[in-house]
Image 1 (tube, rainbow, N blue to C red):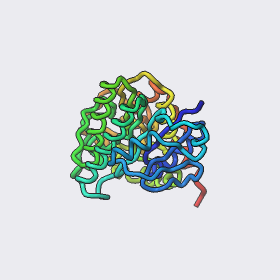
Image 2: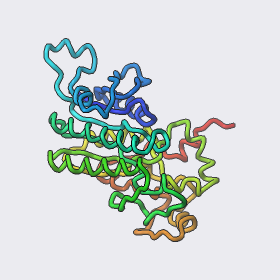
Image 3: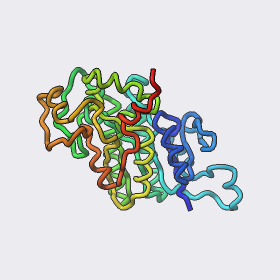
Image 4: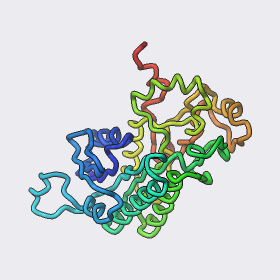
Length: 301
């Protein structure tokens, strides 16, 4: 029997690609968002994550009219994937960004835990590494950026994600659950690969993203692997693709463009400065959309 998944934020930039990827793997999905999904075969329940009652109900509802045929009320979902959020700074006032992102995540995790759901995947962010929305030209503490990095954002969005990671850790410990936080890199949709030659031509333009990215479809694979991997408790995973979004090798590139930033280990080949070693080793992630292959597929101008 396929897993029943509540997916929050499935109508957003990343979610609209992850939803169909998961559907193709046989999951039963309910999108919970402020607006409908663009995929009519995937039902959407419209609602507000900052209302805990709505979140509780979203986890305990039929996914469609067929549910009424069984003659019993719906059980809680099997797992939750939580992507919904104010997606960056400068869309809403800073205090509102923080409130929505922190309380929305708290409500999702609390409802899941108290309903007996023991697998929750939440969207954290590359912004926790403190440079993406920093004031001025801030350097990273060290390369590579791995999950043990002392995260130090100065903006409301990045701070909300750090807070959410702490919330996830607390609930995972209390309820002995698997809660995995994905530090999602700069999300790249298929049409975005036309921008990559410009990225290579302007190296410093990608510093705030640590010259890393995640293909939205590869993010679907990462979520799938999280759903299929049990027993890890609380975990943080960098959700990025394998390689530097510039001409490498990475070690020489970073020494040129970030000469004052130490290297904690030898960076191999053109590996991304945000390291995805952990998801490759613990979850078996294998990227399917390396950027050079995707750029090569673009139609000639």
